[in-house]
Length: 493
Image (cartoon, rainbow, N blue to C red; front, side, top):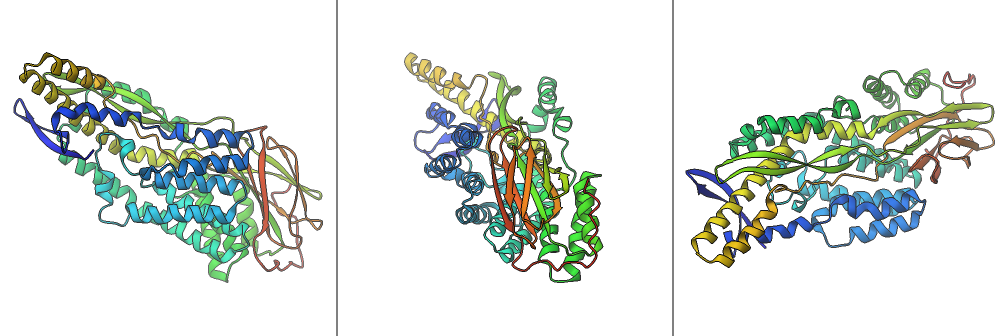
């Protein structure tokens, strides 16, 4: 069905309405077909359950089925989810290829530098879920970041550096352009739909809106700025391990300082910063704990005035961020006589909430514009039916349009669910016997790492006390040059 946004004059007011290209206004009931679209939480439930149970291969199969269900508007989000699940299962080459498709699709669909990006952000649809998912700024950054981890696990630090450069460029896009373009799209929508401000300022709507979103700061503590601390930390580590001189070392130090500026005092960041500033090149093993799941979206409904005499109120549905509990809070890392605890350096809820907060006025405006269009079309359908003097036509039309009596919009619940809630890290000198022991809420594990090399261990824990998937790999093809004097780093205790 081809849908067109046109204008309808009701009592002297020009109101945008959504019409069927072939049957026009009498087919408003057909719009209800969009309401049956499964939301992303439903589509993701299978592979999320498999991950919680430690069924890694089954999770890959489930995510692959979802990604091949011919729902083109979900191409990007499905590829992000599938690539992440493949990576968790240790299928790094497949993960890189899948995430690469997501990256390419995001570049095609709505690059932040594209002149069409504002129009994409401001698009109004019958159903938000019917719009193509084009990705967020953090989708772009984390897509490249995870590809860098895939490259490191595959023994290709050169490709990892390329991906981290892309991640850094994506962050710069967000800082320089993304926020401004969100505001530009919001301003464009205000200009195109002159009732938005009046509806948003309604006392009843403001009361419900504040109840739903007023505690977002307290619940998620959004980071200031558009950088992702884990991406900066990983870039700093790779620049240290695989650096090409003083410039890379200085950049590594600057990135760690930026992370510290975002987080405040953090033992792991302070330790890495002191180590890299010291100039020591003794082999180290970095441990990354990825725990829990990123926030999900849930739908909340609001009633707003329509300012149409025949239809005084309409309903809109908006997404709300909900934290997913159960993440492991940390792990203890031991090697020889040394031990250290992981420290959280990135809460993805804080990353996601920052952008969600910036987008919320735009999301709200799109929902209101869509609801007004559908309400006007519903009213026009009823008026047209009355003019036919056909009782059955009137009854059928009123029954169909009354489906929209309250929830006249459907919220877009698509968000990258398989990202972890936390990234926590630690560093310990690579032990001579290559044996690292891990215990705590992620379970007890003994992991082998290459001796005499800089190495990384990645632990993916979905829930505290549950199964964990662990991968280890060396970070560079050449061993780190040993320092003649190698005192114990200050973080050891």
